[in-house]
Image (tube, rainbow, N blue to C red):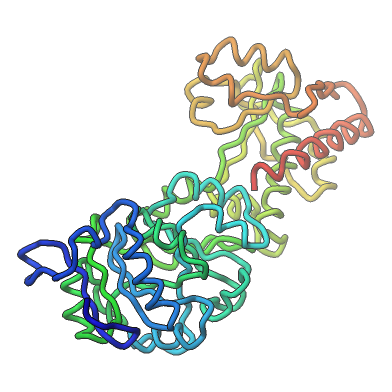
Length: 391
């Protein structure tokens, strides 16, 4: 086996005529989309541990990898790509559990990860996990779990974090196979691991999410609409006539969720802020008519809480619309029973009582301002107990 190190080019190639000559190494050492051979893990570890740069396959494009906790290795990687000094890089991981190293992972992130990881989505999150200062950017750190099983398993076996960036010169198209990496970098990469042609051939989407920001930094294989649809929730509240309890629950929920997502009054309509993160909040009634105004006391109580529901108009439960919702919260057990009676059995798991303990919220209709205020306070308490599951 020829000598090698962080400064010695070394190519592991599959027996593929279009890539040219076959490597003299045992073909079992190439990195397929399967658990890697121990010898391959050891070879990559040797290069990265010594501060070198290795090219690894992913399902999107090939990436250049270096130790993320080694400032010199990170600087060498940035220089190799001709990226501007100080450019952030992405921590690539082989397990979802790596997210636990961030200070807080909100439900919006958990929903995205559940759907798109492993896969072509890079998340830029607030916080700098231990050792990742060299690749962070002003308190934010990028993280991705690639769907190439061989590379993911390899990363999971290393005892240090690995930063990766697409294998290309700055502002050029990324390489999608090992031969292209070799051609572009002409021996300047210590190790090029051949996993064949990248399955997708397009870079991951990059989403900055947190602290009031839902910002697509780079378009990719996942659309902004799909990201919002996955990150957010469509929530509805159900009472009888949709003029007292459920409109108050809707208004209070809009405010609470928006604040949780970084909204401040000077930012304008909280519903627009919710929409940015993919949230929709509404209400309806099991015996509601169309277009009825909210109760005046409900309007006054919500106005004192900073929400204007004067423009609300009642609407009945429409099964086809309910089918599009993620969470439905009923104000009483009778509302839930009536709702389940008109929905298919599969919808039952999405229909709950607003109170997690199972109590009813009494109807304030006919009462004075204090009755409505007490009702709103009870609703707000139940909403706050559920807020951590939403945003």
